[in-house]
Image 1 (cartoon, rainbow, N blue to C red):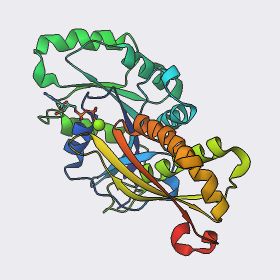
Image 2: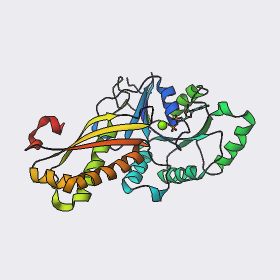
Image 3: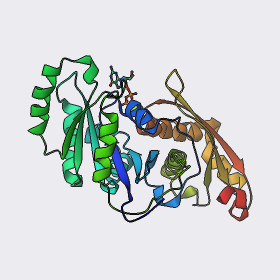
Image 4: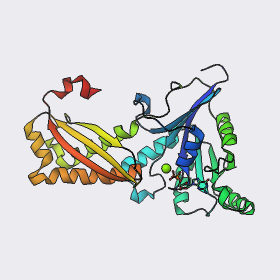
Length: 293
Ligand code: GDP
Ligand code: MG
């Protein structure tokens, strides 16, 4: 799957909630996204899908929370969002044909300008408006930023989706594919969830807990029809005394860790989260191959 004309690169997809990002990805990927194991070079970002073409590989990155105003984001979220934009070769900025630019869009526009990457404007849901509505909208957005391409689409109906894919490929660097042909996504969100829980443990317990604590995500059930994501995590420590500290007096500490972690996770995944935390003592877990992997 390579050759001198093969192209391969990363595309970040951004836009306010509900503009149709997931619908477009599903349309482009044409398949249910499967979970496969995480690759080290992707730990910073969440790969939401990989499109394999005869002459190209397009890797789509998600940018959770980027539409939020700065004051509503914590440092980690701002960092992840910015890094995702900077890691991409191309940014797809999706808006709806049904409404004019809003405050949320303006935050994203500022971030995109800072990233200095080529940006496509995707005007989605064109099936819901009259053709005459689209031109003035294009005009309005063009005044906010210099877009490389402006593509009206209907993610739901599929209008223009193929054309969009072909146009994206032109903006990707020439190079070999990054991932095997059968891989469509990775598991980075689990990794990020574990990191957030670890961060809260250190923040809440201060110096009392050494870095020998591990967090295992035992269960990660993506958003169900009620919009709830279920996460079950096990905090592994080496000593009973550490377990006591993390649980705290009548469970207060663990509760506080769980509440803060859940709030961050909800912002990150943009979903309600049910977080279940357990603490286990496992002496010498660092020698345990299973946990390390
Ligand atoms: P996301 O939050 O940006 O990922 O948005 P979703 O992909 O979850 O879509 C939000 C809603 O908009 C869903 O109800 C979709 O069915 C709907 N939607 C997405 N694209 C289109 C489109 O092109 N036309 C219409 N009419 N609805 C769409
Ligand atoms: Mg979505």
